[in-house]
Length: 130
Image (tube, rainbow, N blue to C red; front, side, top):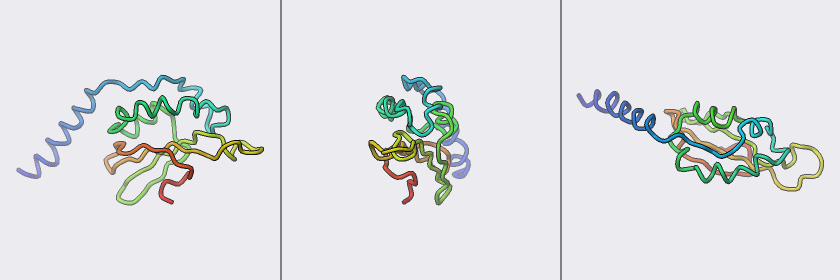
């Protein structure tokens, strides 16, 4: 009976709760975000704060929902215990050629083994596990 409750009923309630949550609006142009893969146009840096303002709504979303909202990440890293990281480059840094005006900055989503966002943060390294 304990197995049934902890492995079937509880995940069912979590799924039902998450599916009833309000939709997330990031107040940005998804096509422009996707086309600015390495942050060279500066659009990703412009809308970064919009994403962070919605951080509480993004926590708990599935990795598929994040891809629907932001497109495929620049880096998709698998970590220990089936955790996963999605890394989106936000600022141009060195990747756009020429003299870097600012360091590379990356928006990082950390996912649980169940594929749900449990942490969102900014880093100056592309690898979240370094």
